[in-house]
Image (cartoon, rainbow, N blue to C red):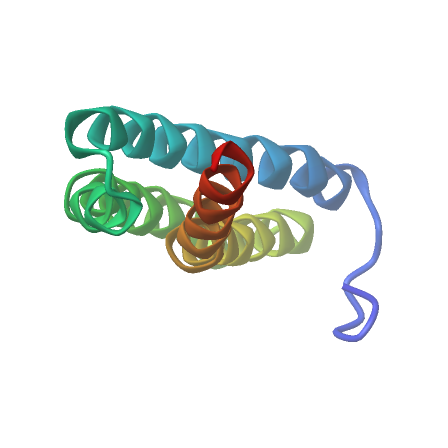
Length: 119
């Protein structure tokens, strides 16, 4: 926000809590799907693949639809609302991208570490 010149106001301060909630929601959704698929077959890579095909689709649909709804605020005549809509949409895309790219890697590494400790 500082680089783009967006000032801190009531609308932009709310973005932090919304972004945190969105990120946690996507993470919980992905992790619960991963745990369910991991219990089925015991292979972390296959569980990630199945989770991406099921929960990943839901996350992508959620990101696209809700971000598009917030991007409508760009047509507002109130600049704080424009900033709010843009920032929430950007944070949704970032959270969705992180949960579909970084989170699977973290889960695979954590599962490998757990197997090494168990052996």
